[in-house]
Amino acid sequence: MGLKPSIIRVSDKVKIINPEFFIRCGYPKSQKSEIEVVKKEFRHVILNMICSREKCHSFDIDRHNHLLEKVCREIAYARLRNMGYGGNERKIYTERLEEHKDKTFRVVSIKFCKTGKYYPPSGPSGGGYYAEDDYESGGLANEKTHKILHIVPFLLPSSMSEHSLRMMDDPLMIETTNVEKVEDSVV
Image 1 (cartoon, rainbow, N blue to C red):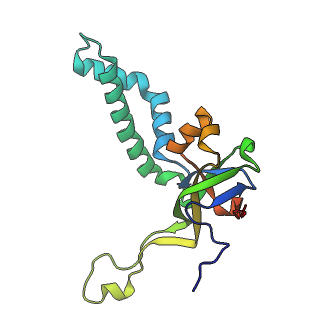
Image 2 (cartoon, helix red, strand yellow):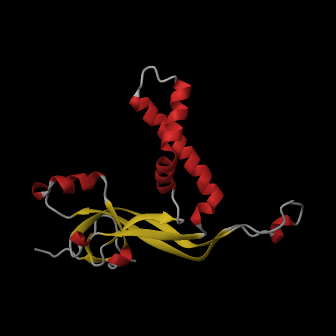
Image 3 (cartoon, rainbow, N blue to C red):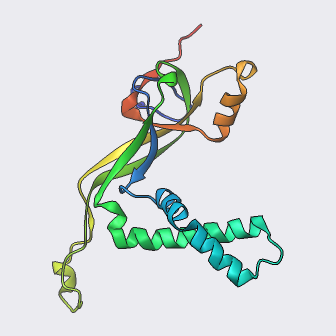
């Protein structure tokens, strides 16, 4: 049985129809965004705490920044857990990049993510012989699977700009619903 020609695979060319590029899939608040909030609100308090502990005789900015990052990350994680990550809806977050509309890209890898509303596990918590019959594991209601493409510009190596070469190391990501497959023409 042959492969379906309409399915997008690694090394296929795609044209950007809707330039909504994938940022992340998850709950409303992410650790990255919450770290920035913690830094903004508590930076001075945390640095004062670090300096009082380290005695700050020789101010090592790299060491202090490393400790600041580490403390902010831990505080952010604790805050996220307390806030339930900002809600129970897991969704895709995007960024619109108009400059890539109608441009052609090459698919370098593919990943999948799921969206929906989280529901917790249910059933008796004590266990027992018949407990597994009444237990339902948690999951996502109205679950949808999304195919995310990691893409790089489709250019000949000699014509690649510095920006395009950087994108090879850090590909853009986009959902398949925002592109169309471009068939290679035989010359």
